[in-house]
Image (tube, rainbow, N blue to C red; front, side, top):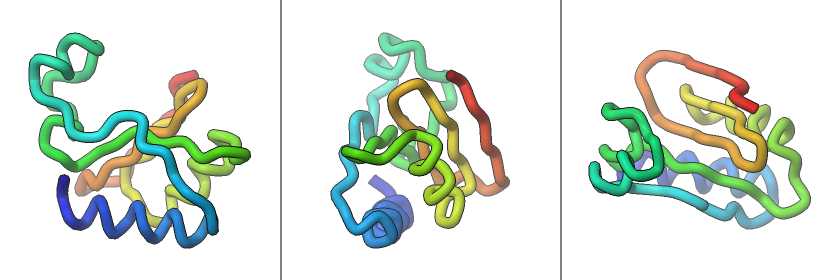
Length: 93
């Protein structure tokens, strides 16, 4: 996992003042393909993870994540965060 990603996750955890559950972190290409991930997924480079936090809505988590991460994608029950170069926010619910 990329050190910058881990530092930003800790910043987010500190802002929440509660634990973050990582539901998906680094993925090998085989697993990434199996779960339907993009062929150039940031997960395969250790630069992304999918997260949730108990008692925190995906909307609230995403808004807080936007303060630290350039890539934030909201799904039905989790939020994808990554450390891409350019800003990208999406809602895929």
